[in-house]
Structure formats: C-alpha cells, structure tokens
Amino acid sequence: MRLSLNIKYFLTFLIFGLCCFLCISTIASQLMMNNAISTKAADFYQEGIWLTDQYVGSYFEKQEDRKAREAIQSQLSSLDVYLDARIWLISRDGERILDSRALDAQQERLPIPEFNSVLPGGKYYMIGDFFGMFSEDTLSVLVPVSHNYHVRGYIAIHTPMSVIVRDKEGYLFSFYVTMVLLLGLAFLFAASNWLMVFRPIRRMRKGAGEYALGNYSTPIHLNREDELGFLADTMDFMAQSLKDQDEDQRKLISNISHDFRSPLTSIKGYIEAMLDGTIPFEMQEKYLNIVLRETERLTKLTSGLLVLNSIDPKQNRLSKSRFDINTVIKNTAAAFEGTCTSKRIFIELLFTDWESYVYADMGKIQQVLYNLIDNAIKFSQPDSVITIETTTKYEKIFVSVRDTGIGIPKDSLNKIWERFYKSDASRGKDKSGTGLGLAIVKEILQLHNENINVISTEGVGTEFIFSLNRAAENENE
Ligand code: ATP
Ligand code: MG
Image (cartoon, rainbow, N blue to C red; front, top):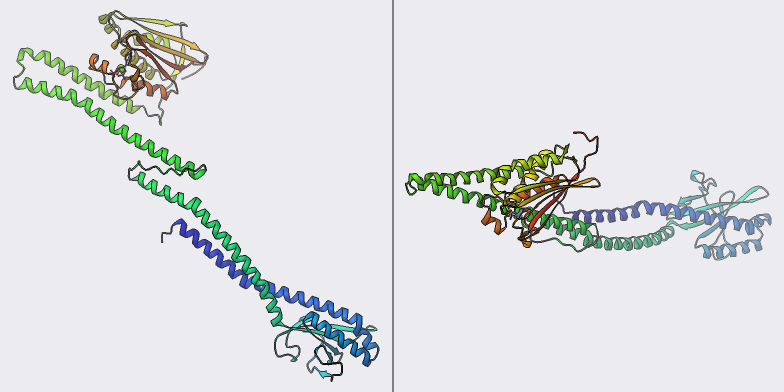
C-alpha cells in the first residue's frame, strides 16, 4: 500500500498516542496502585506505633481499666476521622476489644474466629476480608502492642480498597489530563511540521514531476533561507540549466542543419545544372571548383564538430607533456607560409626567452594556435603584420596573437566563443568559415583550466591572449 509521508507521520503520531494511553491505563495504573497501597500501609503502621506508644501499651498495664478504655476509645475515634480508617484494638487471643466506630467504650468483645497474627506473606498488612470480618476488599494493617516485652494485643487499622482505588484514580486522572495536554502540544508540533516540511516537499515533488515531463517554466521557488529553501533553489537552478541545455541543443541542431544545407543546396544545384546542360561543358570546370570548395567546407564543418564532440570536460582526456611553446608556435606559423606569401602577410615572432617550456597537451595547444593564426590571417588586409608573442609571468606563460585586421564589433565580442557564430562582416569576407574555430579554442583552454581574453577595436585590430602553465625543470610526461 502506498502511503504518503504525511499519512505515515499522522499514523505514527496516532499509534504513539494510543500506546501512551495504553501504558498509562495498564502499567502506570498498576504501579500507582501498588505505590498507593504500600504508602497507605506504611502511614497506618506509623500511626499504629504512635497509638501503641502513647496509649494502648499503658492500657494493658492498667489491666484494661475503665477510664483508660474510654480514653483510648476517644483516641481511636479521632484517629479514625483523621485517617478515614477504622481502627480496632484486638486482644492477643483474637477478640476485638475496641472499635473506633462503636458508639462508646462500653462494647462487647467480638471474637474474630479465624484470627492469625501472622499475616499472609509475613507482611504487616493484608488485602482481603480480614479473616471474614468485612464483606468488601479491605487494606488492613496489624501493629502488635507489646508491654514488658510481651505481645499483649494488636492494633488493626482498616480502610476499604475502594478508597485507595478512588485515590489512585484521582492521580490517574491528573495523568490523563497531562497526557492529553502533551498530545495536544505534540499535535500542534506535528501541524507546524506539516506546514514547514511536508507542504514544501509536496511542492518540490510536484515541481520535479513537471521537470521530468520537460516543463521547466514553473519554478518551485520556496523563498526560504533553510535547507529546504536551498534544495528548492538548487532544483530551480537545475531546471534552468536543463532549459538552457535544451535550447542550446535546439539552436545547435538548427545551426548544424543550416550550415550543412546551404553548401548541399548549391552542390545539388550546380550538379543538376551540369547534368541537364544548363551549364555548358566549357563552363563546367569553374562550377566544379565551386562544388569542390563547398565539399571542403562540409568536410571542415564535420571535422570541427567531431573535434568539439571529442572534447568532453567530464572525461578530461588530456595527454599533457613538457614542451617548448616557442618551437610549437614557429612550426604552426610555418604551416601558414603559403597563405602568408600570397596575401603578403608577415608573421613576426617575439619571444622573451629562447625556450619557454609549458606543461600542456601539445596537440591541442597546436590546434588553438592554428585556429587563432588562421583567424588573424583571414581577417587581416594584405601587406600587414601579425605578431605572436610569448611572455613569462611567475608560473604562467602568456601567448598573444595580434593582428591589424578588421577587428570585431563590440556587440559581437562576447558571442565569438559560441558555436557557429560569425560576425556579419566575416560572413561577407570569409564564406568558408564554420564559426567553430574559437569554440574549439575556448573548450581546449577550459579543459586546461586556462583563460583566453580578446581585445579588439573595429578597423584597428584584434589581440587574443591565453595563458599556459610553465613546466617545472623536471616535469615529466
Ligand atoms: P572557422 O574557424 O571554422 O574557419 P570562423 O573563423 O568564422 O570559422 P571562429 O574562428 O570561431 O569562426 O571565429 C568566429 C568569428 O569571430 C569570426 O567569424 C569573426 O567574425 C570573428 N573573429 C575571430 N577572430 C577574428 C580576428 N582575428 N579578427 C576579426 N574577427 C575575428
Ligand atoms: Mg576561425
């Protein structure tokens, strides 16, 4: 059976309350009864001893003299009222001599036929009919009266058990009242708990259900400064991230489809035109070259996407080693020699040290340099200079790639790192660009826990600066 936390809590509370009542009405009631009996018996015994010492001892000494008898009778009567108990004076051979409830001291002796001064269990009190003398259950305490070291008789003090039960029930009632008050308080506590814990949990459960269905638009937002509030905020944050991811994914797919569709459409168009003769045979070479460029673009796009996909920040698969960044810069720059010559661009290398050793993934850093130099050349005018510089600062080596090209518009500066982003100017200038180059650069450097910054002024030039960790002298593979 599926019970909500709320109902489980309520049932636990109810069972706890019932158990408390059951315990009080059985165990506590019995303990109280035992306690009331023994306390009463002890009190009676003390009173009996006092009576013996003060009056009854001398009575036997004076051979049951009439005056002493009257004095004792009056004492017994007062004590009877005081204790709310019937008091008997019993002779050694089991005859009741005086009864506190008799009208006066001139009363007949009443034999107690089954009298035995040794009470059951060897105790000084008994519960029962006191040797057949009472019709209801009675607590009777027996105190021996000694004179000259001889037992002369007994004082018996009786009170019906119903009186003790009544007293006990009085105590028990106060217990029940306290219990009900405590349960009332516990109920208030449970209610406040319900407000503070269960209600927010129910809201979070509902929110999580919505998130699971892909509906991220209704935040839980508990507006509380405690653990539940933080949990709700974390869930809201998670929902927002999932929403962003969802949107990113949609944007990425639409970008990919768009970037794949345009070259494919033009390839298809040219080939169809060639096949149906719209493009005459002698013109075909020109259009085949266009088709080739478009296929190259598609290949570049695919490999860019594959590279981005292979960079997984969670797996962090870097194969770091110690290498000289200056050599890597020289080699990468050399790869652009052809393009530079045709565009009459000069690459200037400025190194503070002959060798600058860094500890990083060489292949990936080479890719970073390649993408940055490629952009610098692409967005520079012919007959210009590109400067690549390394500087050492403490434990870091900074690499800067600076050009004097078209620059990046201010409002595009924070978008250039997004996948597929190309500024409008570059769209006109560079048709083969995929807009993935800088996204790859950023991800590679993030994987290295390094930063990259860009400083650019439209029409003046652009500088990209990234940092790398300096390799220690003995840093190994
Ligand atoms: P790909 O790198 O795939 O060839 P791309 O160069 O257009 O394409 P990115 O390298 O990601 O893509 O660059 C994104 C955009 O940032 C460029 O399209 C361009 O608008 C701008 N940009 C990057 N580097 C420079 C630069 N050195 N000078 C001016 N604009 C730049
Ligand atoms: Mg690029």
